[in-house]
Image 1 (spheres, rainbow, N blue to C red):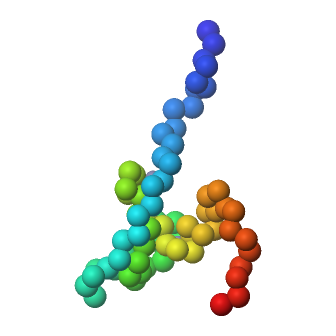
Image 2 (image 1 turned 60 degrees about the vertical axis):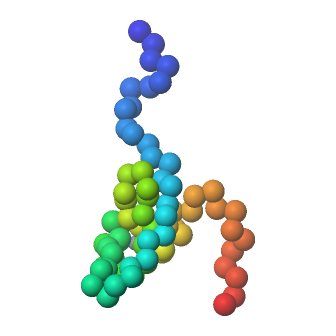
Amino acid sequence: MSQPNGAQAAPRCNHEDKVVTSTTTLVRFRCGSCDAANLTRINECVKCKRKLCARCKDSAGQGGTASGTAGN
Ligand SMILES: [Zn+2]
Ligand SMILES: [Zn+2]
């Protein structure tokens, strides 16, 4: 039997990130990748709810067409 879709059934999320900002000092986020804590801003996927800090999201490099690092 041939399997046109492959045997792997890993659910792949396209990760629709939404920036969540803490509005109170009582709420802090934690990155699900690097485990950085006490974050006041985090990117949360609206689909799978995975949380990613700005740094990890940056290094994930989704469709990275950003041209290098612009001097700040
Ligand atoms: Zn996701
Ligand atoms: Zn992180």
